[in-house]
Length: 143
Length: 141
Image (cartoon, rainbow over all chains, first blue to last red):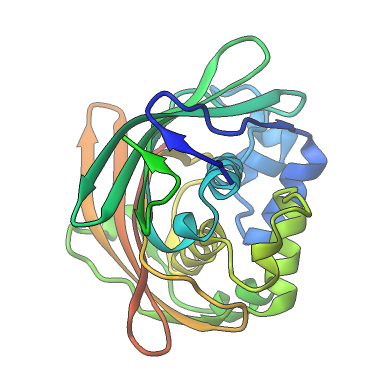
């Protein structure tokens, strides 16, 4: 977890290598067998030109970063709003990053707002948006 | 997968038949240790996140809620996720039984673009809301 939370603080980066094997594993675990994710011959004939990772798999990586930063506060008092800008494909090296952009204190509760971005090794943005966490007992938060 | 077994065989509704406000049948499922273990392996969760030995990753709840809806919904192959919102309200212990409710928040057909937004609410066995979300999907023309 972040030892001190202040405006401008970077969240712990998460880097993942996307493979078709991981996409297939996620399809089995989540029950999402949309052929755009798992059927290369189908996906090749679509405008996307090949299989892509599940959006929810990429969001899981973002959630991992938020859990590393905020622990159980994220699980119980987190908020996420994201847009998918480009697909993550097998072979991509995906980096999830974030930064604390504002902290609002109200009645001994801190509302931490973070910008979130996920991009591939070519610098293309895959996901962009924001996440928020509500923290009570805010000894490690400084606005 | 356990989830798949629970939703298979149910009548599904097509995109054309959906109207804003349509409510999908509620769906209950158990977040078993094996289900969560499979999920953590699939998302390559690091061992240092010990909290997931006790509590369910919130995105796993979202993923299974969406899988439950998918069992009732027939979308054309190639439909893709455009945006996602989630809000989490409480820790969910592994082994919990949760109930997923979903409805059509918005349906947009413009030129060759078809979009569908679903509102999700997930409740625990005490009927306390644990998570809500909004999923927007783009359908192939």
